Image 1 (cartoon, rainbow, N blue to C red):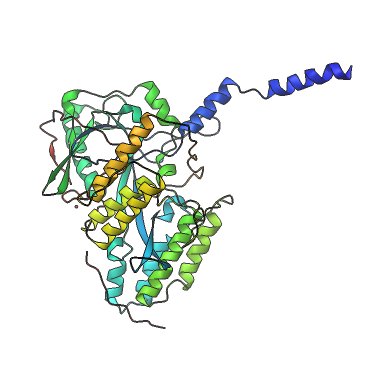
Image 2 (cartoon, rainbow, N blue to C red):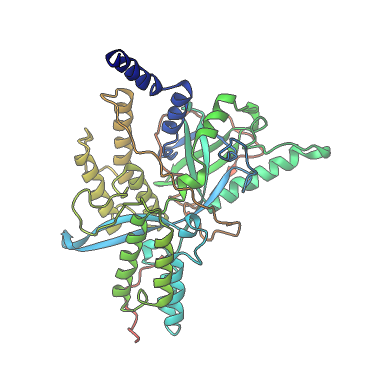
Length: 460
């Protein structure tokens, strides 16, 4: 009798463990909710895109909650940290590790202030008589300061390559304001005679495609925006809306702050103490801020930043990823630097290391710029994606749900300004672009620090 029941019991066990249709849908949704790629304007041409509205959040019962923020974008303040490793020399200089961190208040609304802001404010209070020090700390990162790079982020679909899925577009603050002015100007015209038309660039059924036009003159790229009213509305299909609902919300994508980011920030600020011969890191306000952030980090956050660590020590590090290389190129251009500067040469070294590490078939010659090489890498990777040899499981996006910062004030200096070489929107696959017809009333041009060598005196 027992022998007859055993097979039946095992059958029941396996039957109860089978994947259901709902399980399959949930898994598919989770797998599609990985970190989105960044859209990048890497070549001259016209880039048509569909800006997507912000999606509502569902509670555990499936009910849609009121939006905390309406529209299509979220603000982002980030800073690229340039951390030196004095134990590892490259051409007689300390090796550099680049880490980009966002303002911690985005991820942890409970803290009184971000660690970098706390450091700057404390330093300027502690050394109030040193105007040069305070001015230096408030400059951009490539000038050795701690000024935030301000951007606006949004979900978009590349209309030339819709198969690439939903991507993130980053605009400098000035570019965003330029786009907003065009939007509001067009919206006012559409709302004449008492009409109440939805947003003309992000609504689900009344929005027009937006174009970014890149042109290069005298080796300097310039960018302009156009709202293509001649092509008619781009109505979002239900399948696209479902994909948008399945995506992580923008704050989850762009407000990532882990133990790795905290430790990298501490390492960088400690180096600034040494560089300027000051003592700020041991101040009570700074230590209190560090402790606050540590208590809010998830218990399962095992990421760490280790300066000079062996491969694999820096869990959570994305500094070697291709998007990070493009970000460094953008930051170099934004600072008014070029490939011939020390920063440009450091980037070239990192690019060559990336090619070697990934065994890419990319041939480089001395006439190629850093941007040229990154384009070649893009083309090589796109070709590999078109002919995959095996499947790889990327790590899903962090499950941490950050609280967005109420950041409606002016964001300060643009990250990718609108009249100089570095206003490229951020990373993503590139492709040939077609010249498209432009709307006459919206086709207007869109929107681009000195180094200090003296040391501040130490004061006890």
